[in-house]
Length: 71
Image 1 (spheres, rainbow, N blue to C red):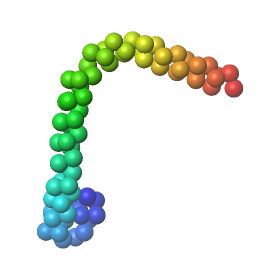
Image 2 (cartoon, helix red, strand yellow):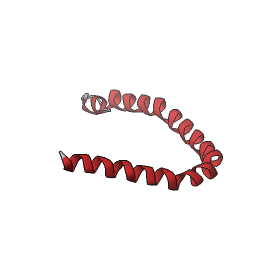
Image 3 (cartoon, one colour):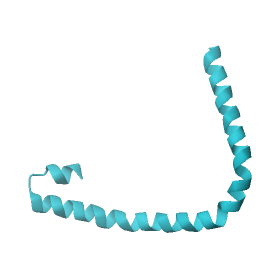
């Protein structure tokens, strides 16, 4: 996008930006659709696992901090 904007030709720059948008927007829509489907399918199992994962994460961060301060 920066190259399209800095090219010096407004028509070519606009065409480059339009091509970028045309290539990017379909994938953004696909990722959003897959994300919505995953949320509806995985919501309950992730809510059950979240406390254990948060405690594990806190333990790992505490261990890493301890190692950093000990050295």
